[in-house]
Length: 90
Image (cartoon, rainbow, N blue to C red; front, top):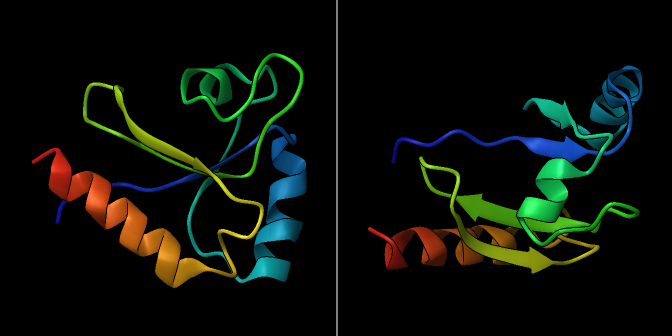
């Protein structure tokens, strides 16, 4: 399956490297300090970001969003939900 994945954080980029090391993350974390992407994906608003994941298509349309503070610890469930969203939109 051809796809790109990123983490998105409201934190500044300087905070990302330390977090990536501590969490064992090997993918890119994008900074969204104005919460523009978070608002677009229903994962926050202008004031607060939510933890979870969103799946967007190649045009930036949101296929699904799911709030979950423990998405990383529940990676099998997270991966299944992402796969379901991709399968439904093939």
